[in-house]
Length: 419
Image (cartoon, rainbow, N blue to C red):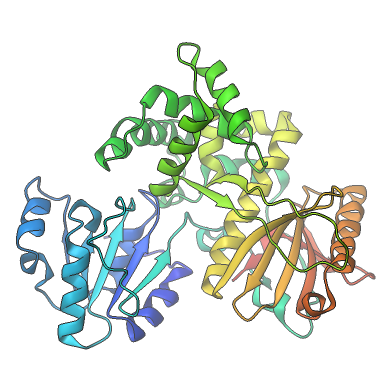
């Protein structure tokens, strides 16, 4: 077996196994869920290893549940009845760390399936961050940006051309391990399989042609608040045969979220000092910006020739990494936009209410100055109770230097960031 590449989620899963009877590792196909589970499990069974095994698990779940703990059950969603069976087994054994469930899709809601509250802990596994793939120097931790002294310093790391290559490659373990593979071919086939095989195989009724057109429309609108009506118009133009309605778009978006390909970045809703109306629409991000590049047929050279698109893809890469790092700290990522036009790309909020704000810029003195001004405006808009929990204001860049400005705003190279 190849050398195991450690993941930020490893410790999260270990901690969960110490407390909960079962841990559910969720994420898209080919992200490394099985590998992580096998790394921590004492025994395992893969429901997709033989065509009949999922049927056996539905009828006689004890067959697949029997084995040393923690026992990994891979692709458990192929036999949804296992959920209740695992819950009952956890109750009967009365011990933590019994099962690890992994899956690439969320089964359809079933009124007969119990919530699993108190027995299950869900852990999201996303494509590898730059820290996990070894491209970040790791000299600035997200944790330090929530400390009493959130000043930063660092120099070196990837160049803008390197970031273009890393965006196109993505954080997929197979491409990280074997950089000679064609990311474009690998991920184009991945998207095709999602539309034609994975979604229908998960019982999600979608039209493959419309889905592929929608994926291309989403790729053109990554890191934006594109409404379903706009996506429907663009998908219809790209399909050239069928018209796509906003209702169909919404259903297809939900399907992509169910297989963890698409993840909304929800709007942050703090209490404000003024009566400015908050915007509540989410922004759209693929689970990894490489999927957007594959949908557009964009390689690193094309991104470098189109700085606007590169900037949007770079923002999506930063959101991906912030999600990976904040999940380990029990935090969530949001975006902020209000009716006055003020927009901040990412807000990381921890469970205890502390938060940090992030703007994303490729680099350049003027864009960084404007980003810092936006961050300071946000600080001035939130209510005193919210401002008191603010830990740091930060501009994420593709530059080689991390430093703290005289106004207290940090400029952080994303190639320096770590959990």
